[in-house]
Length: 280
Image (cartoon, rainbow, N blue to C red; front, top):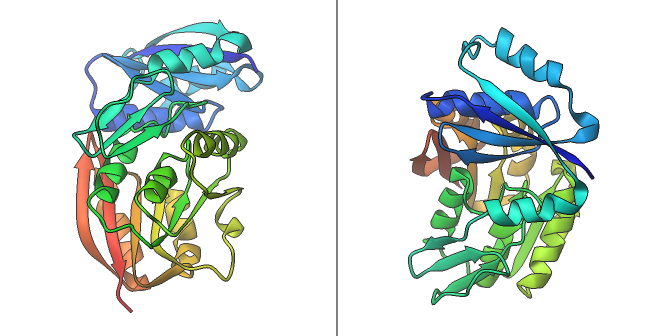
């Protein structure tokens, strides 16, 4: 598939405004981003790309992007796509605990070595939400636990959980590229994971989890938490991310009535993470 690359130059702008701009681009066909100094690269399948939708976002946004955003457009042919992502996805090390790397990058002396060859950028541990969840999982007792990774992306979180001794891991994503990439990455890491393409409706109705991870945007989380709740064991943990620091109160207020208490809260680059435990 041919892709369109749009390089956005924004200058000095608050991180949360840039992330909201990306969210708007997601709604008009873009599916992945690579951060750069004073801007970012955005990618959309050529068949879905319409430049007028970009100009509409820039000109009509209440965040006043007009006169601040400049961009250039380029076509990336299908045969070059994997090379683009290989060059833009660095390895990520969590001190001596874990290394997330591509297969063409050198192995290092860490407790967990995870190979992720991404089809897209999200899920390589470079994004703040993925980074925070990995850092959290590395501090938790995972051995013999059942783990759900909802919105799995490249599958990195489920793969880590399995390497940490989880008894059962289920990884679900609505996107076909994520389903295929998680299958490939699980094979590369020699781990056995139940992988499904779909949304919350794909969870086995009879299955409950000790640890339920959902790294998805705020609206999807609020829509599906009633479903997630049915699949979490009493005293089980719910790990939520994919929303901004300013949305923590809204997320917390929505989730607490389902019988959860906040155990831990993290923030990184305007993104938030909540670790909650089911107490009823």
